[in-house]
Image 1 (cartoon, rainbow, N blue to C red):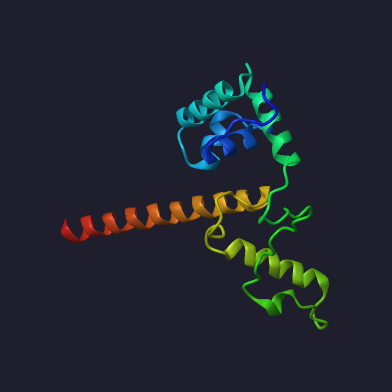
Image 2: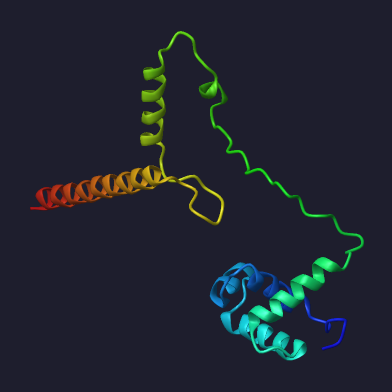
Length: 163
């Protein structure tokens, strides 16, 4: 194989980067918002260009070459990227309140979590903890039950009024 690697399309590069990170075709397709067939086609094309038999080998060659070549005009990726901070809907609730005991604050927080309608909006992944997910399911079940009972009572009342 030649000293320089063959020219790859941007899509082929993206796929090989994700293959190097250990993702399979289905996961890569989800991340890039393309079909699994497109990912496989890009990887097969890369294999032919590199002249190697496996996708892992092609990804390794590509990533090694990419790290070796200085990329002019681009920023170096941050090594540490802190997680985004969640916004507090009520900033005063996070401030310590000296007149309330800790147990009262914990009960208020639990009550607020129970009464909050639905999960937080935004984001592509479910960022709720296990207990948050269970709480959301219980809320949905209770609200569904209340809705069904209300509907049945309305229908029964309508039949009594008509009959």
